Image (cartoon, rainbow, N blue to C red; front, side, top):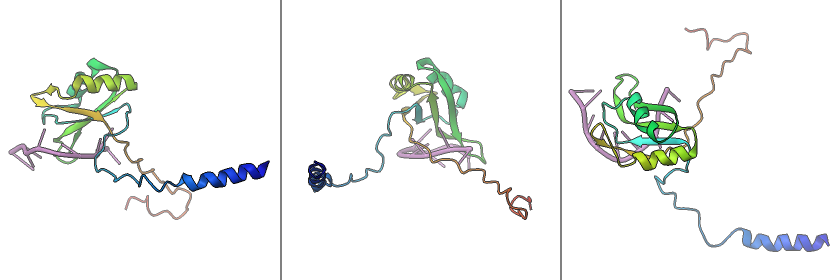
Length: 136
DNA sequence: GGTGAGCGC
């Protein structure tokens, strides 16, 4: 009885690794999978985080919004992110704001890509002779 | 001073 299953699995393995359908060519910029995070580009340099939230709040519950600005100059980079509470709101936000005008510029709203995890604080306080946190 | 494709701390 078990031999039947083993033989069947072995038979299936010959087809598990398909000779067809090679790995995807890895397109550089495919649209990200639907999520509550939205990537908004084409923003005006004068568009701020508040303006972004106000514009997208009309289509759903915005739980987070940020216009990316240069850390040193503080100037807007012209794109930002809007996070909705639900996927339905995110979809409505895209349909309602993608290709629309905001501060005189046509903006583009799409699903944002998952951001790489933030580096852990990594406080090596378990070592008596810790010079990395001496602040010098 | 502020580019006009992009993915943030």
